[in-house]
Figure 1: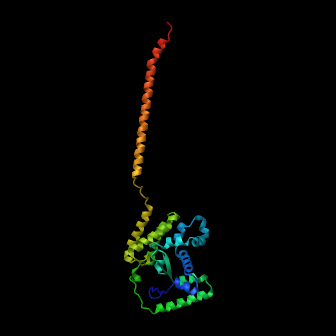
Figure 2: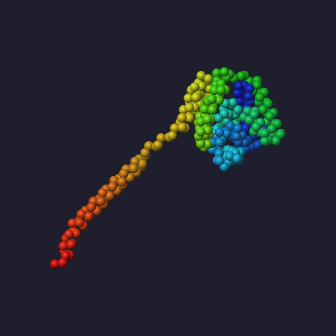
Figure 3: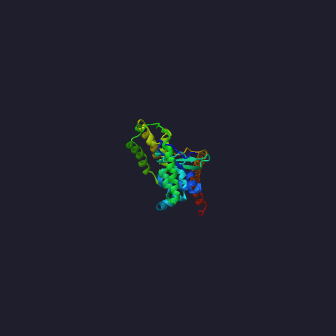
Length: 275
């Protein structure tokens, strides 16, 4: 795999496997540190939606202890977060759905290795310089959509605020999933990150976001009764009918008993009278 990723022919990226080689570290450990870095920088909304109240003050520990679940939830299954907008990194998944490596731009690479010793950082920086020189001499790749044709900064903010404002009205546990699905729907429709949506499609983007919000605001319909539910309901109705019938029968018996008692009283009085 090439470690050079040409974005606008000016940026270079370094793969985590090469970082592991340069720093003499196991790739699994570099990959874990990378996931912690990315979820901390770009997965804030998702973490806010799932972190227990008691762990808010220990956010860093919560991220590190639960990085596998958090990373899969925030970045897996086609989720679209702000990192896609600037092409700062690229995730590589294997056929089993596991993260195999990550390409990082200069800023993220240096952020990742900031905790390494000076010698190791220096090796990485020298390699980054080499990659950037190679990228600089490659032919430029034209944008599919010109920058002047995409959403303005104001339009981007309006679209983003539409979703984030709606997310704030939801329970914290639902906010991460809400934002993730909202960005995913925009990406699925336009095939580009929201910053690259053509200006002529701005109203359509707002409509998609609004429909997504409406789906969360609409209460789900009650499920249709199952065969078991119907049988149970019929049985209850039968019991109620039987109970009513028993009540009517009891009343009739009591009534007949009273009438019989009244009819036998005069006879008893006559038999017991003196001669």
